[in-house]
Image (cartoon, rainbow, N blue to C red; front, side, top):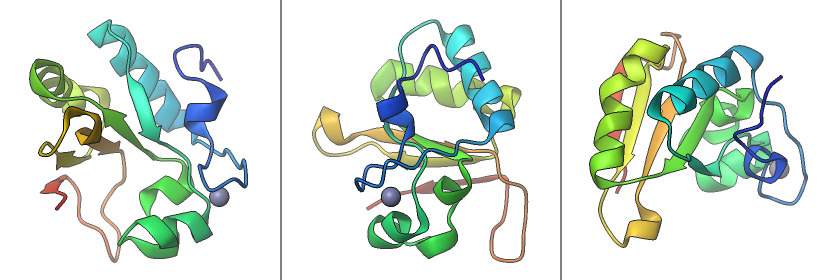
Length: 128
Ligand SMILES: [Zn+2]
């Protein structure tokens, strides 16, 4: 898997467990998006183990980060606009926005889930 654009530290779970199990299809989409945008994408969260996801997300132990199909990208303003504008073209189906507060807290969540029992896609949502 070509992960030249993203460090192992960014991709692994931040709880300290060190697990990293990003989905290969998802990473291909993310890399294609990164190449298209042609500016660095800083990931604040990528893979999360079930326990960590339970601690930090309303999606509990089975959210999209636990299957390696989601990232949170530190981004705002014009770059966030460019990212969101092309996300669908690159196969992303879930866009979560946190665009208030200080700039270091503004991010865009991307995932490529399909509709399942407890999840509807495509979808856009915001974070408090
Ligand atoms: Zn963990």
